[in-house]
Length: 319
Image (cartoon, rainbow, N blue to C red; front, side, top):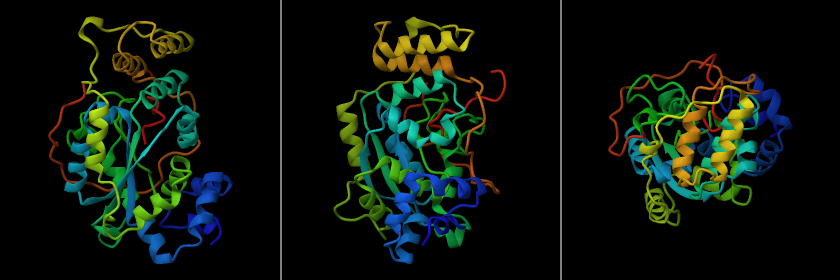
């Protein structure tokens, strides 16, 4: 198929993605790879499956297992896990079409999180409700269920709310908004393991050789001490600098460790300082259009809770 054919419905309903992704090198490379696949196999990977990527704050905050339990309760079955390093460069590539609108201080706070030590955990998921029953793709259903790190007012309805997401930057996870995003983002995140990731997504059930997500999470927990993700009591509440340059300089100080505080204490302070900042422009690509699904109230999973003028900026990692 041509690149444009990989952008037909139901892979995306967004005209902006259809105009933009044919010029995106990651999408083009992935489309060329998928051209060698049988249609049924590609549909299993792209329409019936999706992925969630747990960020370092989910590791130190011990949110991975509660999140997997929540997802299982909504009929998302794990197919396997891969660890992936997301540094500042990968962050800018993954969220290229949203990061353009984020304040620089927010971007630097996200850099601190992503480069804090623990790798991210990519978990392939099969939607056992299947598109024929839900009327939507796995990626779209999970994107709605995931919830926004900015809108946390409806307790327990979204995965992020159930995990205790209290700060925009400490939002624990990422998932693609639709299958076209899934295609592009696998290309960005796993340049040397694209076929491996797609094979996981296309599997009918978890392959015997695939790493079990909870087991990988346990290994990451053992290697990285837990943190409550709350501000150290002795620090009180810092006043946010009034101008963008001073705020960016303050976040840079925290990143450099000039306060002498442990890294995750500094990350929490940085996340609090940038909370609620207004966007500095419009994102190049926003959420796909269309009616959002509604979901029944979910049971809050067991696990520890996490401790502006104008529209709040989306953290580059909000999706």
